[in-house]
Length: 253
Image (cartoon, rainbow, N blue to C red):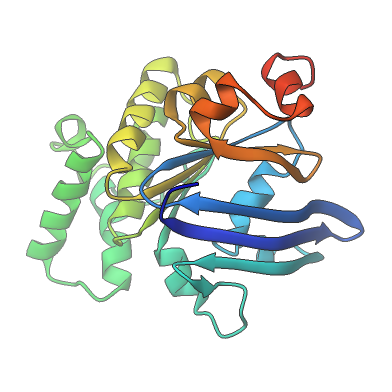
């Protein structure tokens, strides 16, 4: 495959207690592309996604083996600064998780943690990332209102703006439109297509139509194993593996 790799997974195994959730995963994720992870419910999609920012470690009884290289550095090494790693990656969850504060402070929160205190700078940052996520015109007159008063679709775009405000390189989405109405979903999808010019995007979805709309690359997981991965056009038009063909036809789900 002809692309610049940003995330490289080598012999990754994840256990939840005695359950072998991910089995010998080997994949490469290209820079400045949208990679979509597909597969039936419970096949390990979210587990794989959350291994990239080491969020799996907060799960009791989890055991992770193997290597995950991000920009050539094995993030599973003991000496990795996990805070800096997570700064490099935005994570959008299924349900938006706005902070219990104003719209302005939601976006200013990250930059403040990283040392930016001057109000003028913070104001510029907030405006820039609200525009980046097409929210500015909708909220510019209510920046001091609680973020929880926004619609669910607006909250998800606010979470994206909040993540982008700390200058990450990678956007992770765990079924990021599953709780949204069709119009809000369309807006988020449109943002992903724009943002891939500047960021690497990795999304989990159970909606094949969405995968077809967004994906440059596909990873198909089944029962914790990578069955097939590669360019989306090839996998959707001419999948090599029988399981992939059956999943795409809806024979297995």
